[in-house]
Length: 254
Image (tube, rainbow, N blue to C red; front, side):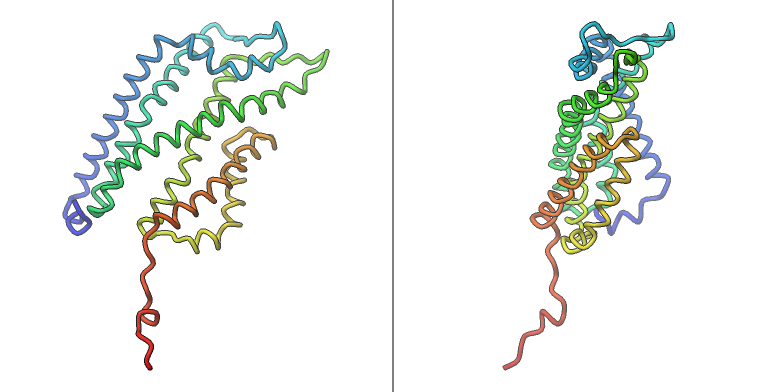
């Protein structure tokens, strides 16, 4: 369905379509949750591996409330289910947007869905393999003979889940900007002109999404700056061709 017919669709139809897409996404997350709950201990072991490797021998995670371990495993299963269902969620999002696109733009949806999933998982893996080891080593470096870190399961899960989701989302930046450039909403010149404001925004976003320490903020803002440059390259390659102005199109006389 193209833009010229999209205006004829009543608002209630858009709400019904949104409801249907959300239900499918919730079902996908629910199925992923059930699957991951069967491997909850293994998943939590994988999630805590970056912390365990930098902890001193004999140190372990603790839980201070009786139901804390149970609810932690439930949250781990939900996080795993969300990661498994991310391709479905991304697909449902783009399909909801699709009626407002032209036919030539709809052809880009499948590659965008695939690349969105790859970028999201890639961002989460970057946080897990790169940021976690350095960040945890920095935090544990404040331990002394009289100060011993005793992280709890609940605190660690909340901390790590927030970072994993944050890195997964921010790694979507090149894809989003390239898609906007393809639609003609932004241009290479616009991105270059506003680079300094983008860098400031990246540090603000990093300060909001990460814990209040300079290390993890820099480790998120740094990749965002690199991703922004990749976005400019993507906008240059795949962006909407610039149309000539009347002055540029007018032939030069003899």
